[in-house]
Image (cartoon, rainbow, N blue to C red; front, top):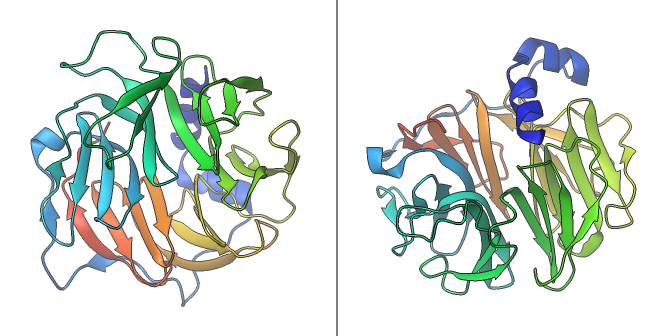
Length: 291
């Protein structure tokens, strides 16, 4: 299953993954993250494990084991709305959000919740499709296109009508993926052996020559951001053809999001935050539990 392959990859160890990627050690320009000079928020036990994040106008949204939470500036995270479903997948969609995962204590017990949508930044949710059928652990969007990786069977599914109907695509063992926000046919994925690129909406993928080995991706406007298993942060301004190493964080990488020059990375028990496109990071939240 896809979930098992992901665990095996991340458990392989940073040393072997660095050898696979051919990446060198961080250069002098790659800044090691440090604690912020201001207040660092402390995650509560109720927050639980964080699966994914989004940077929005309100702050950083956290998709957790116990619903969606919001962290504003240096304040402690607070729950958004009343829903407590396990938010395994979370992505922006137009001016709203889409999500997937497992039902919470107050939700109907359907096993997998399929795709849900919110028009009020996660305060309320409505079912869109695939209820009881699919649990997306990865979601990415571009225009009306939504693409997701199902945890149950590793299926790569795509919808071009906002999640109403879906088509299954071949999955070349993708771990994470990102859609070009300006071209929904262009997809970059990460795999155990390196990055892959599709220019035909996921029908075919090809390796990206010379690309660094990355774990997670985030594509916002013109900047494609990636983080490697060694904590190095990279950016590409030409749709993954070339990559620049810009900074670094420490700890096992768990989640990544970007919005313009803002980047947030969850690694270990800390959420690292940058306002200069990954050149420098501060710790914004600490004490975040594992999954």
